[in-house]
Image (cartoon, rainbow, N blue to C red; front, side, top):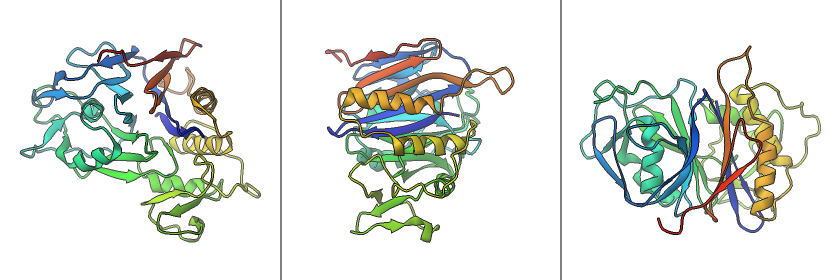
Length: 323
């Protein structure tokens, strides 16, 4: 499960927020210093992360830190999310590339890339592997990833055909469904999406061209959090429930109708109210998954905000002065 979105403020800030919907585990804030050393579970390859990371992870992992989401010292932020049994990992290692288990990818990404542009440049150097030939049997982790940085770009990173594929995310929301384009098409039922290609000076109605690519799309609005024409006349009420599509649509509409935050404090407040609309409570009749925690990072201040399921307070963390 899991729901992720970015929310921008008028002072140039950007909050990257998410729910972590999973089975119970001991989530905690983690600080990994520069030059953090670890070895991959696939082949015991030694890794050294040049960049410091502030994030949330499983505090009981024995081999190395397990980061689920966070930000590095340069403002690159990333999250891992469940991918609805659609992950297609590599079986054979390629010489000269880094082989990782899927759950290790964020630890590598935040420790080795400073920006979305560096992610684009380096993504082909990494393989996410099955455990068929692994030293440690780590099972199957169906994951995909989302990332952003102070430039405002947001990307999805998905494992397809044994390689990692990057796609732009102009909507600013992602959940767990395997085809992002299909989720966007379903969203059009509930709002008139108004996006602009970088080379155009007039608005484009994506309803008129349902096969148009999402590549190089940006928001045509003075408020960068809004992606619609602003008219909801004749549109149905957004769906309830906790399916990936329902949460995707709710998060997009809540974000669309939210006020434009003026600063980091207001941005976090608005983000938390949006998270309230997609949070999954514990339930005896549904499944064992629920929102274990909600978190957000502000990519400019590098602050981390964390709220676990059993705590009504939000804890705030920063990088230490000495990394």
